[in-house]
Length: 263
Image (tube, rainbow, N blue to C red; front, side, top):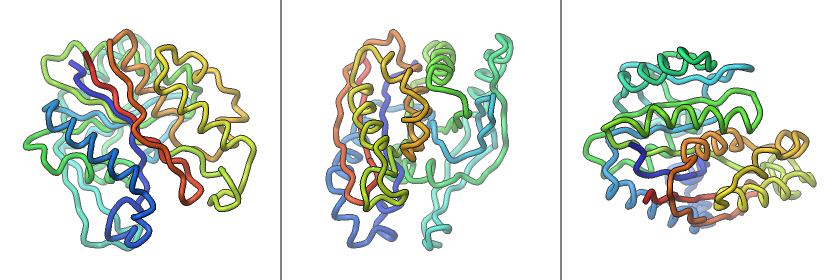
């Protein structure tokens, strides 16, 4: 059953070896991460399903990475020492894949032991004190928000019927086009997107978030819309208490952290 859910950013600057003195500007996000880490420890998940945007993506299919085990590094950011390992919940991945394929939902499998940073950073910051857990890595497609919400609803039917305890995490950065300091420069769509996400993630009715115009979702330079829509789908009709823990953008990229306590 689903016992906990959260939305976290995946900026490499959150890691001390990379962020160094710049990490101080992410104080709110780091504190929010610490709160979620404590919550996860108390929730005692057997499996963590992470929905992250930088794995393989297909135009018309969702996917999961079904390797026997996983290793994440930060070598692409110059950190050759940091390594994280995770065990695969390959049985749950297989059950989910079979169930969704039986119902003609476009859900395919990949297989790679290497995790990209959008998985690695949440694992590093959230699982240090978890004694034993398994990973279910999920990648979104290129379809719209409604399709991802529906995909999340279908995943929920499998996860919430499991005896094992499952936490669902959306790894999601928001707009990279908020202002002139942003990596993608300034755009009018960037602030509109981030504001819509801030409102949508705590709303009991996410329908407004799911119908955001494509010019906003695609021109805001974000990578978190589809993972967030998928996570919200997994919480459909589940009683929960949503809390927006932090939002900050010190480097021109929106970093939002939120949690969902399941009642």
